[in-house]
Length: 564
Image 1 (cartoon, rainbow, N blue to C red):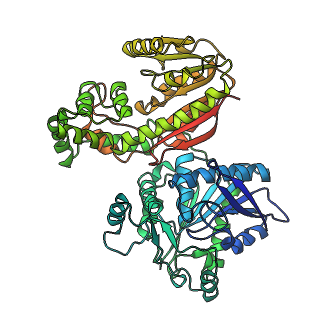
Image 2: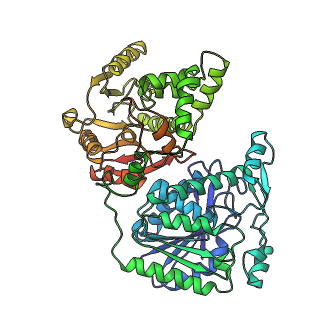
Image 3: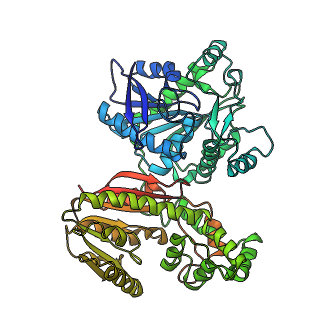
């Protein structure tokens, strides 16, 4: 066993251990430990796989073990998935093993990290094993979650002590003793991280159908730490063509440290060997707009609903909502319109009276609109990096610029960058031109063009950077957006960069479909694309994804792809 470190994107030092097989199979297994623990706790399992010819890597997640960061804390749960994506790519570089020849074996909170990584980043990993996944943690205090949320609103209870003792983790007395005397195991967790873990578990269960990776789920029958029903629900909703379930009725939560752990080890090895011996599972998403998980969800939302909440909400928004400037505007031009989106970005509650301003504030802080603003922050960060790269003599394109909300402000700082902003709407084109003149931008071309028309992409190898933001989320048809992706790929120079967004999930998808209208006056029914689907469409255009960023609520992602 050897030890090394890497530096995460926010400069946190992450420690990891690795074990190299003496007779390697050119395959890697990555181990993710439970919450509160560290990679040293996975040594017996690592050595077991190593003896079978697998190289093994295991990290101390940030805030755990020897790694840096505040103990058992993170700015959001998504940071762990981002760290894991960076770690897996590092392991691939160091070991020389491609990601499609890797497997992840994860326990408890580590299993939630692995599942969120699959959902949000869509890696081409060969398979995953989730053991006693902490999708829903057992909180034995009545109303614990709402009480913790209330406490955090007032700044109380920044940390929660863990009730978990070694005797409810394993029957093995020696393992209990090792756990009790391990100085690197912590006894608490940040309240914010606990709440975010619970939220992440809920969204992963709700949208498990977006995950198609081969998966084995291990469940303990006497688990006092996490709920078994949530693990089963997640498993049933997976769309993977290769998913298996193992139930150990007499085991406690820590399956990899139980008396009967050798049985668990062999079950894991059997699954891994069988997956590696078969042809890789690759889902074809080109027809996902016609069949499959997301299409089924979309079709269900077009059926009538007997839930009285939706018509009552529509009535309230049509009456009381008219006191809110934002809701009134959205009723006039569509909740998905550019004008409505601009209002959301402004984030200044307005209304005809005090009641209207209160309603407007609630409206602007709904999960989707808050996520939209966080998405813009991610785009701004990535856009700044690319503008800095091409600042001396670069060309940048936005194929559906709206009123130019992304590009116009930063272009004032990069006078040598030539920008072309397109939009289908003549009013938006007029607004962009007026704003460009007001900002005295000298290298700005504004074009009225249809992003989904092949003739809009006549000139090849013209641009260094292209942006497609918020556009594909409005159109569920894949051949339509493939036209735009192929056109952008054609117009990018070799080495050129595409920044694109996606919406893989929305907590209010049904509410929106049944209460809000789009710019055409029709019910706003969205078909959310999984990140795997969106990335595949980008890949079909000849581009290669190199990075994904996900905003804190896990609704929107911003990715970067390069033209080889």
